[in-house]
Length: 309
Image 1 (tube, one colour):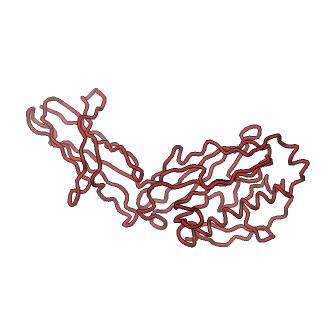
Image 2 (cartoon, rainbow, N blue to C red; image 1 turned 90 degrees about the horizontal axis):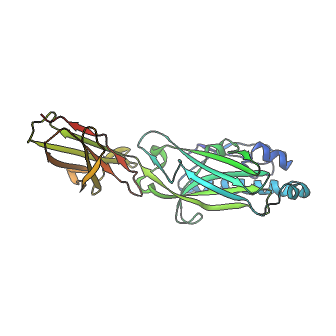
């Protein structure tokens, strides 16, 4: 667990300030890059410590700027953070082997000068005493400013997180996570929150459908078999997702899919498996659909059409 780096001011404080913020502060900066952990156990605590220190350094840069210039630059009372999203919505999904990139975006407004802003992602009941996982972003690691000015007193920010499921995730990590986010501008008050957004890290899902036999004689039985699986972050394999509702959908060759029945996936040797039968009357297509849970994303199988003769 040594993907992230620690940055320091000549005073010994860690810093993740963009070029514009450093220039505004007038501080001489020397970077000392050393390995640090990014998630789990003491590594999570160290990553959190780095995030808090970087926010403190941005605040120090703001305080060091000439007061007249700082207050004249804006009439805003407060820094505002808005539009926080994770992978374009409220969740992200990770498979079993490939490193996933999770993207957090947000907007900072309310101040004409930005001294620094960064987002981190974490899991736990409490940031200090119940911390389970904590990740700083790739931009934080590279000492790169994640924000660019997009209008008058408005900044658009993007942070990316590289997560290798084989190194950092267990099944218990699926579910609710939070975004820690801070933003320091020349407005009177700043933002430093542990929960700018609650989002869900999910175990990648997949679902199959096979309708057989093909072709089939009219009046004979068609068997529609499906299997719902999801990533297992403990074994790094896919396994059947048991006792879950899947919907069987049907359509004509030119029509739209509609749900005709709902069923519960199997257990044991049939873990995740669902099997239904229909009488062949005319050419028809079938597929299974899963609506998803707080730990597993929704998925719709590719349809399978049967030629009835």
